[in-house]
Amino acid sequence: VLDIGHDAGALIVYTVADMHGLGVELSPAQDDRRRAHKDVLERSINGRPAFTAVFDGLLAGSYTLWVNDEPRARRVLIKGAEIAELDWTTSTVAR
Image (cartoon, rainbow, N blue to C red; front, top):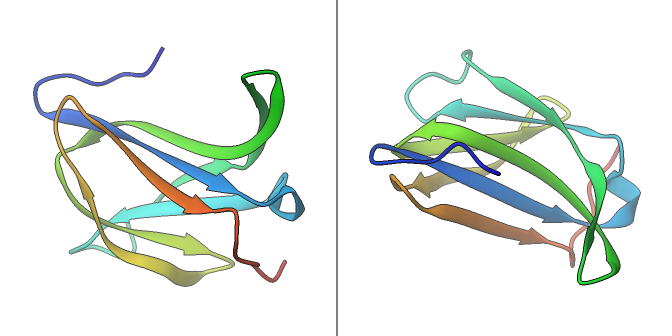
């Protein structure tokens, strides 16, 4: 169950298995220093392993995703009462 509502949304980042356990951070676009942290965890989707970082309870707005203290995606749009998704399953991230 994700914490979403009228003015709060969520973000699911799908990653490659190599990112399992890696920390991903999320900050409001206007404040790179204010970051929330989530680890990439192994979950099951339709009986298959999936490696994801899940951020919920996010106020609607634009965000930046960080990996290893480097901006990985900017202008990630979060809308209230919606779940945004990013697919990083075809890319690699240095640990």
